[in-house]
Image (cartoon, rainbow, N blue to C red; front, side, top):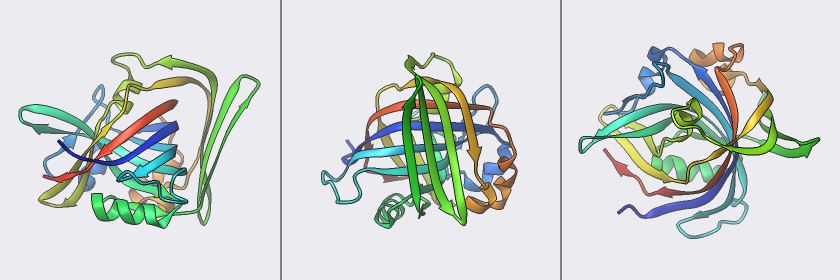
Length: 236
């Protein structure tokens, strides 16, 4: 059984989902994985959220306990012992502390980078306003306005597909993949009222994602999140 690498809470996950051409992701696809589609749709998701009460290998590291993260990810599956594991691949993950990026890049071969970040959570007039911002040149932002009542995620829904992936896969080389497991209960979501995505995707990510700057997301939702456990990874 894999040992626990990290325990934390992931809270107030602002999630904007874009439909993309499958060919756009071929160069990012880890060895032995294949794209996981929902209703024949290939998604990438821009996600902003908070890490809270973070413990790494059982220790709380000062100044690295509560912090923002924003990532761009897509969805894959990997067949192991005749069964499919559904997971995610991160194109890039942004955090505000360099030590976080160093650990994740070294241990999990992820593509973390460090940028100035900030966030706000405001409850006003029965609305929850969540805002994540990060700076590269200008400030970029992902904002959602939602109701304050939590709802269960419906079975067979798009929200279920986006949130119910419990494995992480990283392309180490053309013949190696890093795999790790993430454990958390089924999440609940808030009813989205409004949103705004102000991101220069070419500046933050790669030129092939530039068109997303003016692309309307296929969906946007806000998940409450939960406590999570990240297991130590293995190499495939």
